[in-house]
Length: 106
Image 1: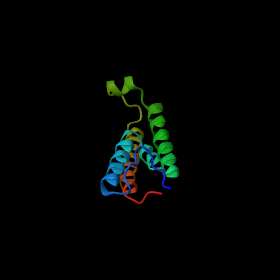
Image 2: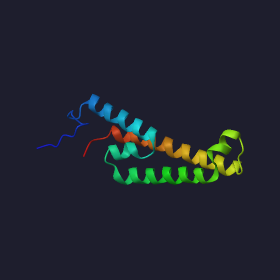
Image 3: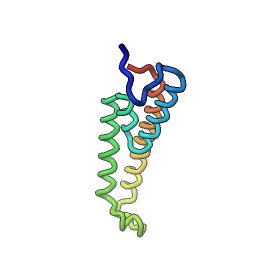
């Protein structure tokens, strides 16, 4: 007997697979790793969550919201590097969630 979850009502049809892809993509767009966790890719999901969390924490240590709004950046190159790294993690997580969502389900 096959287990059916709330989100995966269809038996491998194209529309069910496409829906999984879109949900995973949106969740990864909210924060890296959420889409992978939705797809039950636990290792990748936790890795993306940790990478996104560490980079977000580091950004918060370098820049306060008050300084950011005033345009005062103490370490502009370090902040740029963190922003680019965080953007790369987000994009990588989104693309991976989309590709993983189209694959066969376990």
